[in-house]
Image (cartoon, rainbow, N blue to C red; front, side, top):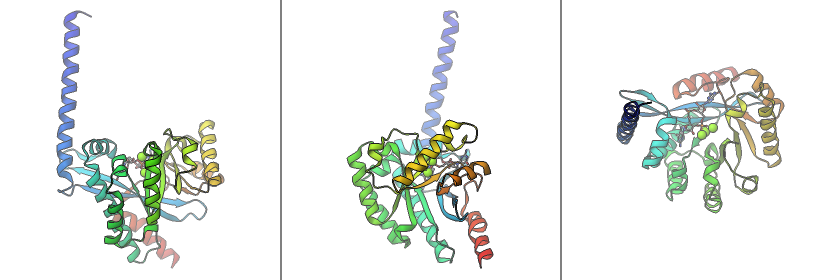
Length: 282
Ligand code: C2E
Ligand code: MG
Ligand code: MG
Ligand code: MG
């Protein structure tokens, strides 16, 4: 390439970088206002007990309805919210909304389910977390046993600090699971001591259990390890019946994924998984 061509390339690159930075800044600004403007909402994905076939819980997942961009994926805005610190008020909103919704469903007389809520690193480390959980449970009236908090392996990296925080959460009576299990770097040495209740096997392993025998080996090993450690185990990202049957054969307790349902809005969840079940049962 000539020097001139290289110059043009560099220019294009600089321009693209600047656009990215501007776009990011804009998105961050929009994010700051989104909470007050009521642009967030939750969707729920059912968690199914593989032995009984019953829905036993649901994971609450946040969505952002941006006025111009439409629906923005959490994969895009959670990292932004995490960096800017906005994740703390946003996470608190998610927790309150999920607990309130679960309580409303319980009061409507449906069979009681456990709601899972994702915590971010910053939220998990925040000194206010315990007060926040306690306040929200008190305000909403949800019993702690019907709430589960999902953390990731990376959050347990600072072992002593994580252990302390998890112990306090467990003391309240709230359950804890390790999300995306198998993709982080937590050693088994950590795992055996952590006060947790459940492992959620990352969907990257579950996705190809039928095609890739290595994935099948990993999934059955994690499942068996969970049993030995007396932890519950949930498979994420179950997309077809073969995968579901494989997991059931391995005695995986619960599963979540498009095979059962995509994450859906509360009203749809109620209609599909709460009302219908109760009418067939009663
Ligand atoms: P996650 O907690 O591991 O949630 C599971 C993700 O996998 C969800 O993506 C869900 O829609 C998707 N999923 C479920 N079943 C299937 C399946 O069968 N196939 C495939 N391909 N995907 C499936 P989503 O809702 O886009 O969320 C992405 C991530 O964003 C979450 O991963 C979680 O880490 C984060 N996130 C979502 N909501 C919150 C929140 O309220 N707070 C925090 N801190 N993070 C959140
Ligand atoms: Mg999760
Ligand atoms: Mg996950
Ligand atoms: Mg995750």
